[in-house]
Figure 1 (cartoon, rainbow, N blue to C red):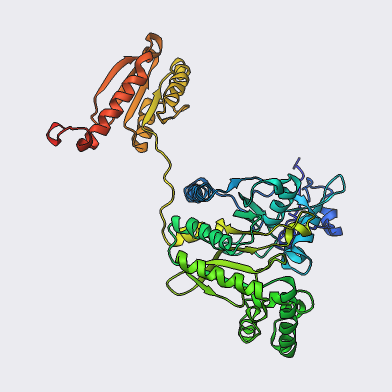
Figure 2 (tube, rainbow, N blue to C red):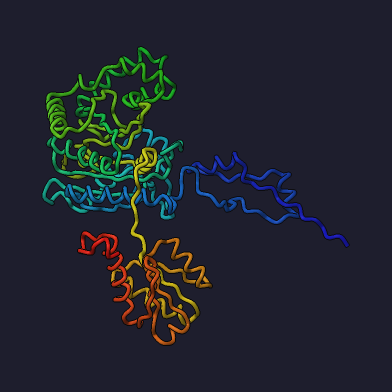
Length: 488
């Protein structure tokens, strides 16, 4: 009797469905009657089929990339320490209204890019799209206003924006964030820009320039927006559709559009600098003098407004350039003197910036910057037999405890295979523990440089290994030890 053939069900994950799954709000797809009929005799396939790939715009940072990321992390932490910034880690998830209140409706982040959802308890929350609002919330919640000013805070981690993925831009992106609370002096504006420059320059990026502008106070900004809207309304037909919509919601964002026709038009638009109040103008003048004193490379960009509504006065971005003149934004920031008060705290001037770590790593690779070099093991522990494996665990721990970085290959069968691993790692010493050595409490210490070896007791193993390592250092650097070249 011929067995019945089971007709396999069609996968419900098509390319269209796959794109649809990128949306934060999903609706269940209803199977067609034809597909439902086939599934009667076929094994059921889950509608939410498990796909062995990351979501669009998300990605894994693999081990071979970590040396670049480690160098970035170390540079950020070093700069934070040198300039007196204290580390703070804030939640990835916050109440939605925190971002709506700080960033405001009418911005791309709130209207298009924020990941928002409702918890099982009914709270409306969001994945943080940036650090500043959460830092401000922490400043207020933990009563930091009583601390000596200025208060410098630093953080590092992922932020989330539902934007169109492209090179160097992801939906989960990593940022390094620096914030200063409690000081209005423009010298702080210059100092945070100095910190940003210190980080990227220490990472080996050289063709760096700041774009800087001032958008004044809310009052001077309103006067400027009126003049800008009058100009843009008269040329509305030349704008892209997105910018036409922005005219009624957030007209200053038109200046940030990258469409060629919009760029050409806004080049003739009124400039925010012409509408500054006297105090903002003096603040900006002092900032430029400080930047000149620090010899930081900058140019005034009257079209620079940044995409967040809480900025006042100083705004800036830091750019890298290639040989063809193409520019890449590495980060930016500005002053937000009114945000803490708007969130319910005391009036607190503040300034900060964020660096896009994904873009920085991309620039490091493009400019062939050397990544961080992790310490390499100098000793390899080879073992043969079950008893030797057991004894090796303690010996491995003893070496590590004395600051000797060791490697092993537990689970590999033959001694020959383990020695190949030791050779590939380039270690200076291999400790060999077989069945005989495990029984009589000894170990073989082989000098991989000279090829000599000796048998020592396990109690004296660490001293024997240190002696060989010290001898190798002496041979490699004779002038430091008084050993003549002829004695090698």
